[in-house]
Length: 298
Image 1 (cartoon, rainbow, N blue to C red):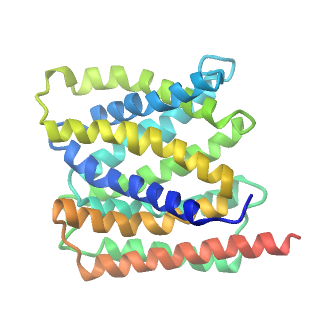
Image 2 (cartoon, rainbow, N blue to C red):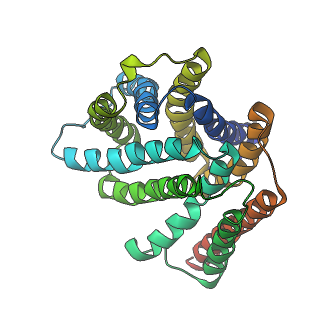
């Protein structure tokens, strides 16, 4: 891995902006589409750039190989479930809250990594970071101006969606020797297969009369926030490594809060700011714990 240059920091910031922009676009998409249809649109439009890249690079897609069951399971847990849960939740809560709740993914992955991997065990610094980060989320749920009895379950759904990403990441270790493009293309194909009958039965999207704004947001979510963002993430990861790429976790909730205010005039309360700071501090200590561990291993 080479020393990061200005272009690498620019690409990291662009990646954070793309992922952050997903939240307010999900909110706009919910004005016309149901959560299952939004999830289906994301995987269909998201598959286009990924499968085109696989075709260009002559990478074989193994969606229906002997490991098809792993692709199907990961497709459900890593795409279908979180895309549905986040869309369901954002319909009733502000998009900036979703950005903060989703930023707990590295904290959850640290917890699951301790129990399901050999090299990602807790240490004092990591544990301290996890406690601070999740205390910020608990504090966020006490903000009665933004989370009340009417949307409490919706906020929990978003939190569950972030956990699904983590579980999907752990399961991906089962097929970690395969090319990333192949894995991503294969799980996208299975997500489409799973979601088509669900959307047809539950929401009948063909009967909808969506607004132009909601449709543009849905296409953006698929092509840009899902497909192109994955390709950009892979480029950053390949060039600069996981530790550099993981810094995007700090930027997403910040950009998410700013974009929600700019495009949707969403309220930013003092508790939202305090919760965001607690999550960011928690992430800092979790990542510092990882660096400390890596340093001591030499």
